[in-house]
Length: 490
Image (cartoon, rainbow, N blue to C red):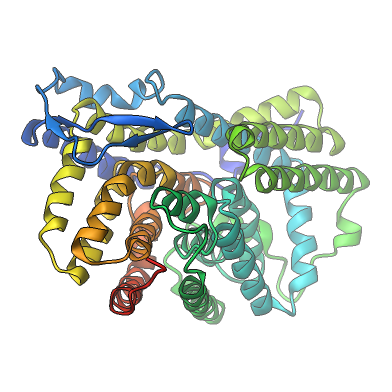
């Protein structure tokens, strides 16, 4: 039986990166706890409409501060697994574990290397075309179809391809994670952001698409420029990459000897080919499942658990076809789960920030205070206040649709009052919700994505902060255009 060491895993969070990221989130947990002692507890009335819970504008009232001791700030990461909203984090944690275990099975059986060699052989002479095509694909999936979470595991395959083509892990994230998040932010027909918000605001479904398409194309061009510029820099001087050391394990596995090309036909066994076909078939089926059920309320809730099952079947079957026995598959799977354990801890801590705010009963207070400020501002300032308010709430609520049901019933009448169109308010909401997904360490999907790589949160911020500043300028320009042109229909 093959001995599988944890050090054999290409993708795992290092000790220093974990401690740094966990420290940042811990500070945010304490800050959230302090807010529960500073801000008064408050509550909006809520109504249920078409199975969704909406807040009632004008119903805010202060309530008695709940008994919420300090020690519970630090047990919140565990409490999220037993609270009323526990299903979402539990499903995500199981998903991370299954993906980590399945990938470890494929990696140790040689299937991952076979897949990478195949892709590198196909695209070695069209590398930069591949970058543009993949960015376009990921942005389209999120911007038009709204599939974000379901595409995150694709990062695991893109990173090694980027390494094998002579780039680094950050280039891989730029090809996958950046367009996923920015496509979601630059949504044109995203059912989870645009459709939900427009429905609450009584706007025609997907109206105002013309300006959103222009914005989408601008962001697409920006992402392509940013990633290709970085890839060319790394290709010219690999040691200029800020993750050069972290990529060493992957580089040794993925890069062929100098002057050689991977011999795909002779290096892949028949069993590995079968495993490759088996695994990719199940992954394609998982993606199609998510895409086809995204707009169906009842089935969309089952898409993520089913995709977890598909990954498990694909990984286990791939191990069998590669010649692994049950014991070897189990050992590899367990090592894979262990390698992703730090990511699981970080996700639990990230979810606990919202839990602390909710238990302290100040979520509605934050929204009420922001709405009162918006009421007293000019039209341009109001649009930016909606943007800022969404950014603040993004710290605590990662789900775009959940924020829409919380905010839009209040923002819709506010938009009419301060002289901005409802369509503009939705644009500001969408900007605040999406782009911050790539900044805030409380965003579980960002932590999941980074846990699939060797990139720590600090290095991610170091790489993307200038891009985020450019995004801030571009979104601000589009918001001003929307206000000044009366972006509508209303």
